[in-house]
Length: 86
Image (cartoon, rainbow, N blue to C red; front, side, top):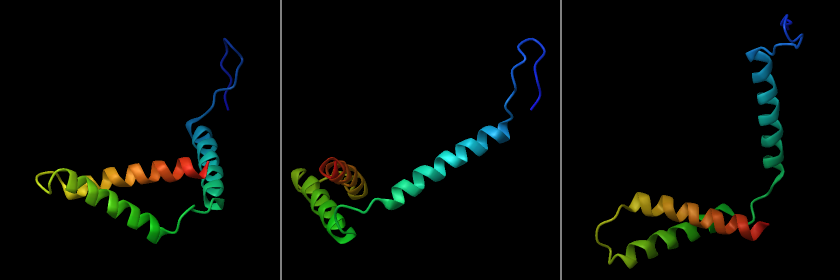
């Protein structure tokens, strides 16, 4: 690290900042890995599928995008499961 003459404070290099950021990411990942899902993957998939079907059904199965129905349902189900876990 170099010193600036006016403030005599150390300058942080980008590589040092990235190293700190990488450490933080690793800590987050390790905590996330310790958390077990509240419902099995098969049950989550079934909840998403049912929600996507209901979305299409409400439209009378006309128009819309099945992929977008799935993605919207996935967000909805994950939010509900997240709230239920806390």
